[in-house]
Length: 256
Image 1 (cartoon, rainbow, N blue to C red):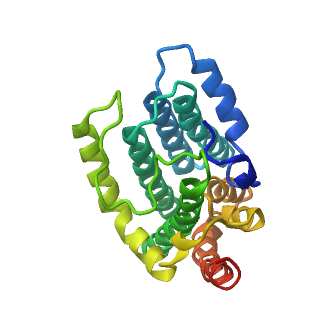
Image 2 (image 1 turned 90 degrees about the vertical axis):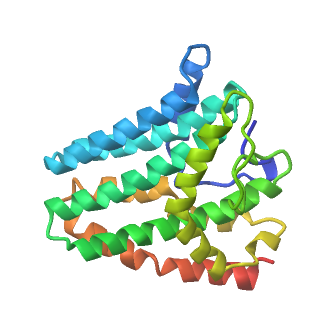
């Protein structure tokens, strides 16, 4: 099952790892590997990237950051191939992402002249950017005929466990997810509370929005590290947040 109906598919600049993810998922389709195993694997790839940054192996760090994006695409692909949608996998994926994002910026702070306050501001900025992307994308997925609806527009209520997972595991991970993401969700919902009323988003807008997708954000970091621009990563993502207001403004004035 695709995340989107054919007419709603767009060029997602943050989803460059999808081809690798499909290859990996297909190679694991008839094995005992589950989507959760793949999620754990992308977490390991992210931790290796952090280790490389700590030791200033920036080309290797870039490789594992990009690899992480490719593996990240594989868990959802494998879940669709095996027809095993999972709230545990959905929330575990998101929890890993925010933990790794935080560690990336704390590691950059540690090995460079970036202040802790600027690193924290950049982390907050990258989360708000990603939340805007996810907010609009999930709205589109939920309204797309035949699209994936595992992710909800408003994550206020613990979902009922799907076959193959326990309600306790869903409860725990949903609780963690709510703690770490709720503030960002509330800010974005406040900035564009009526977005969910939109019937659909045009493809060009979603492609523009994908500049805020996690994959594209990580690609920027992966490019800046080996170029020796580590000092500019935190300032860049802080100022990159100005695009938030441009995208929301376009949505409010042009897309109803």
